[in-house]
Structures are given as structure tokens and as C-alpha cells.
Length: 61
Image (cartoon, rainbow, N blue to C red; front, side):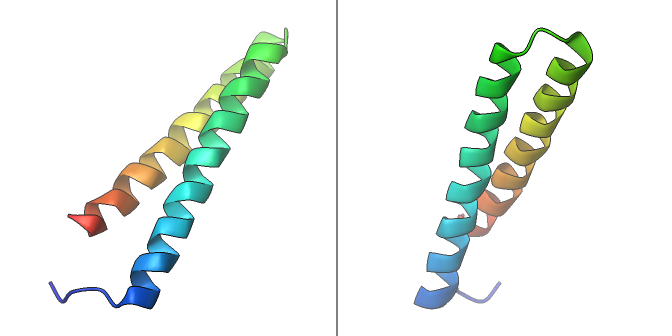
């Protein structure tokens, strides 16, 4: 695999940060709501964004 440029690395790091922020926000919201269906949706949303972050992190290896 070709090495990434500085610009690509910066963009990748920014996107990973954004994905992790979404995880934290969704988890926080899931902890605040009392409706089980909404909690489940938010937890699913958090899990999906964690998977995105994990996938993006593989490009840094």
C-alpha cells in the first residue's frame, strides 16, 4: 500500500476524531433517555460509528 500524504493523514485523523465524537455523544444521549427503543437506536448508532473509526484506524497501520 502506498504511504499517505500529510494532507491525507490529517484528513484521516480528523475523520477518526469526528467518528469518536459521535460515539461519545450517542452513548451520552443513550444514558439520558428512558425510552428503550431510543436507547437501543442510540447504542446501535454509537456502535456503527465505533466500527467506522476502527476501520479508518486500519489505514494508519
